[in-house]
Length: 465
Image 1 (cartoon, one colour):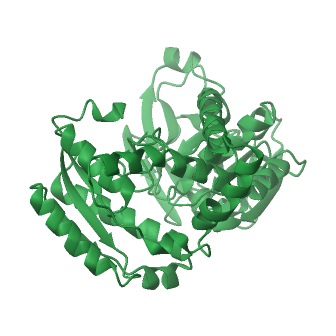
Image 2 (tube, helix red, strand yellow):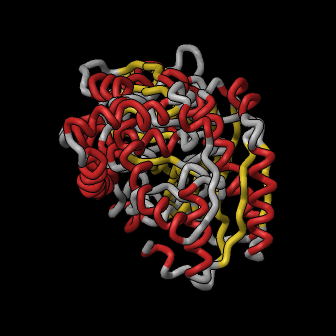
């Protein structure tokens, strides 16, 4: 209930079902003088729902509380999205509550999940084979949530057993409705509540308390693991938040952290690439780990939810489209060929790449970063324009410092680990006669090198837009 203490000057949406838990919460909010609007979500599944709407309308009018009934089509949503009735009802119900909260400008959505619900959720997740995240159970306050980025979901009754809520309603003469569908054990949660818990309580009458205790332990350990994941993230991954987002994963660095952290890093990477994706399963995550640790150099592997791992030697990329990844990550030239004057300027090569041209002096040249392979320096005394083009059949390059040795450009692109999807449009720098001056990521040619006597030194730098 602590999360309500700071809520005196806020206004909320209360999910009001008419059951004992939500009716108890209704009156607790009134007693604490917390402002709220009550919203009943009509699932269209029970005949008595219309009667409940009428009764709740009268109840809210009596206490001068604003009330709204929102109707949803669970069966149509279930059919369209191939979900269970429980899942479809839950997703639509929360969507409706947060939609009203957003329209009304409310500071949160309050629901009446209680201690028993928490125990049921943890047991359900345990039976599904969930990890620590699932065993942590529900949060008393969640923001962002799967339902909204900025409006919090509040569950102030998570520490209150259902028996206490029933007693509260009886003592205060609060009328509530019993949903007869709660006795239908064909629904998984009802099966847990009506049949599995009574059996478990014969082994341990405190089984619900023990499950909630397990949830608290799992939550503490989950928090620690998340902190460790964030600590390692920048060492192992780089997130490219472009039109088609992807995550670069350094394979050796990932292999160097404990498996528990590897799994969380991969889950975080998946959330970066596909925020809307549902929780990816254990088998998928472990298969990704095994393949990242494998010895092949290049490959493309496909996983659930249209996720791809694209392998390029010592790194791999998590994405959902291999060709889009190649275009974003590697330098690309949209046009087949462009001619550029060697004056200070910036030239767009593609939607993601630009060429920066500068004129520098000998002192700046002598202190250059020789390790930057996407930066080249040429003699501007001998050359006033360049041509940037795609690779051509038979292209070869004579490399500076190799005694005039030539090498096929096709081989060069493989040597510098350019993905095959990116090779066709990779920018090749030439002089006006077509001789190759430079392949970004590689060496410059023997033609037009900077000399001690060069007065006009041209710096070419490839950058991302």
